[in-house]
Length: 453
Picture (cartoon, one colour):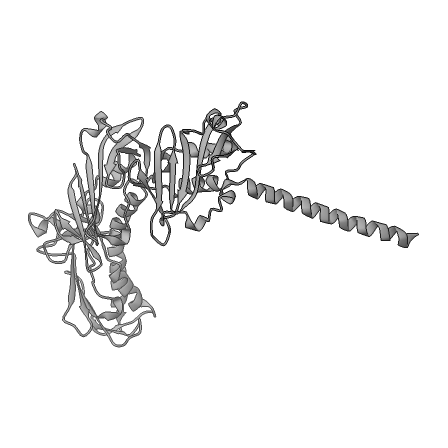
């Protein structure tokens, strides 16, 4: 009996498994067949053009021929696409489906369905001119849950598309528009000009290094330039205005930014007045119409040239330093000379007959020396003695380069109201150095002087 029971049960089990598999695959096939992109055999890799016509907009998007495959809006205006918004639109197009089909549709039915002269049309194409899919959408059905639709090249069939599938097609050009206030490739910038009520600053890249070229000329602090570029990169529009906007806030300029690129092109950003409840009005070469940005950017672009001040006090690597001479009026001078390539391969020339105290003193001294960097620039004084640089300076540092006549000379003077030291190298540019850096160097200098042997 047991054998007979198994003989009946096993075939029934196999039949059930086959039935479940068949029903499951049939459902998948039906779901796949209901998708409009599947019916039209649309290949996503061939999609280069999206045209969407609604009662409010006539929109055309085109893929840019770049490795990352970005898209542009080309109608009703020219602008870059917002990647996230575009991806959402494309995903919704490929998920759009039919929930009911109508065959052998007559002309009268097409009129009844609103498909003779529909206001909503979707067209997908490739750059080769091949139409991948063209769908026309008519009126809503009696329940209002779907709209009649048909493929433009088929006059005798129609279908219903759920309303929720069509909601993403109601997108406006501004919703697809890239939010960037100004677009550029940071590595391609070769000059920057910022004009505001504070100052007009011009920066230029020379042999890979940034220089402030106006209102005076000096090396630019690379970190400050990077922050400026980052602020521009991250600046987004929070609201778009119409192309012919004439709001009072657009009547007067407050800040202008111009980026010159290596290919000769320019990117422009102009800030205008502020609406306290909305933000700062702006225009740019990136956006086809005025827009509004967050007010924080005004403070970040109203810049004082001094924040870009930067001087590489010792403009050669530490391992190329051959000799250092530190002079201090009223105290013993220190002079050391390199004897080898190691961090401790140094000898003390002055003061004479001094013993080295601990291993690491020389490398700590060189580190403290190369850590000296300007804190802020300061105006040229009426007389160097105003900064304590004449007739008696606080410290004179001479750093000699190996196998070269190059000498980096730094003069340190008195302290300013913040406790930092006034300093200069050439008597034409003046700046301050943080007191902590100078105090560290002084401590290392005293340590090297040591005690008599």
